[in-house]
Every structure is written in C-alpha cells, then in structure tokens.
Amino acid sequence: MLKILTVNLNYVQDGYGPWPERCARLRALLQAQRPAIIALQAVHVDDTRNQLRELAGDLDYHHQLFLAADTTRPQYGSAILSEIPLNAPWSFALPRDDDDEDQSPRRAIGASFTWQGEVWRLTNAHCSWVPAQNRQQVAALARALEDFSGPQCLVGDFNAPSTAPGIAHLTARGWVDAHACVGQGTGATFPADAPQNRIDYLFVHGCDRARLLATRTFPEQGAALSDHKAAMLIIAQPRETIETFR
Image 1 (cartoon, rainbow, N blue to C red):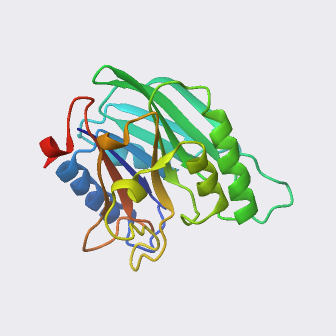
Image 2 (cartoon, rainbow, N blue to C red):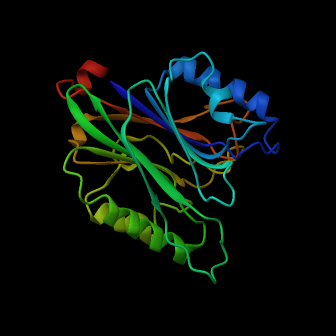
C-alpha cells in the first residue's frame, strides 16, 4: 500500500501550541502511520528554523524538496518529504491579480516517483482563500497537469469547500476526490480544534478508483498538529484488492 499525507504546518505560529510540541506530535503520527510521502504547506525554512529538517529528523524521509513561494520571502514555502526517491522536480507559479485581497505569492511544487513499477506524479498545492483567485489558480493547475499520461496525485491546502467552483472544475476533468470516493464522515480539516470545513484534499487522476482504499484525518483525538488537520490517502498496489487491505 502507498500512503500519502498532506498537512499545512501553519509555519511556527503558536496558536495551536509551540512548534517544538507540534513537531513532536506530528513526528509521533508519522512513526505510527508511516506515510511514504508527506506534502507540507506553510513551511518555514531558514538558518534559524528549519521545520523540514526538524520534522524529518531521524525518520526515513531521506528525499526532501522545498521551494519558497517567492524570492522576496525565501524562508516560506511548500515541501515534500519522501521515503521514495523523487525525480524531475518542478514548480508552477499560481496566478495572482495585483488588486486582489490576497497578495501572498503561491506556487505548486511537484516531482515524479516510481512505485511498484508505475511512474507517478505528485503535486503539492497551496491555493488562495479568496474565491475568485482560488478558482483561477485551480483552473491553472488543472491545465498545467494535463500533459502527464501516468497516474497522478494532487494534494494540499486548497482553501475551498467541496462545493467551490475550483473543486468542481477539477472533478469535471477527471480528478477523483479521494475522500468523496472512499472517505468516512465529513473529512473536515479546518479549523483543527473544531473542524467544520474540508479544505485539504487528496485527488488522484489516471488511477483505478478500486485502488483507493481509505482516507483518514489526524489527529483523531488529542492536541492539534496545526490549525489544519492532516489528511491521508491509502492507495492499493496495482494487484492488491480491497479484500487484501481488510
């Protein structure tokens, strides 16, 4: 089975506890669940604080990718941790209107990886919370990912409910919302202490739906990891079945 987890770290903000405490909780989750790939948003990396290094620690995530959202703020961006080698890393600047309420620069990052003989592409996105800009960014993402012929996984903080136009745009183009397909309950991820909205997603494309085994959110109880819950997808190997998983 392949486990892919996504979580917004909320940088080193203390609203849900000091980062060292949140980091310890997230490391405990990684040790318990053993996702092969982790997509992170709102990551702080500089000479004084490297959330990526602190989180990976002595765990087996030897393949790491970090990209700042913008050169004017080089310490802030998105990242991928992986037990599986990452190949052909790439990035894509998400569009932004100069007069928009949300002026945060945003980039999607991604890489290819080989698992069970299949070449996959993983994309990690962190989209705007402003509805019009969100719709524009998700549409641009969909166009940018059209040229890949193999199976893909698109994950991250989309800052939009499942009823948003951008989410509908993706599903109309063949992207499968994994939680809508195999998840239990609402799958709400935000805010973490009293989740009401599902804004963190795990989409797949070019993969048989029968291979989607389950989605889960964390923590299931106890102190939060961030202002978002983590979301995880479990995918079967090409020859596995749901009966094997059970």
